[in-house]
Image 1 (cartoon, rainbow, N blue to C red):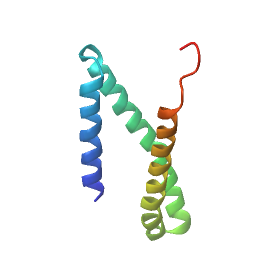
Image 2: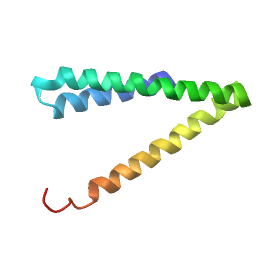
Image 3: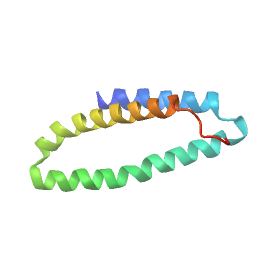
Length: 91
């Protein structure tokens, strides 16, 4: 399931970039996105490894997907609120 989810997320983000980002900066945008993704993965993996050392791998493998699902819904909800909020004056 993780591989399928990663594939779908990668395809969706590349499609979004292809449609919304000007052609002249698509390469730089894609490189920045990849760097951020890889850079942000390191602290998350270190944290998961530390928690797995304390509570066990089985507990982490059970809880991590649930935590990520709740986090994804929270981010989606926040993004919806920000998208619907009126723009500040002077913009």
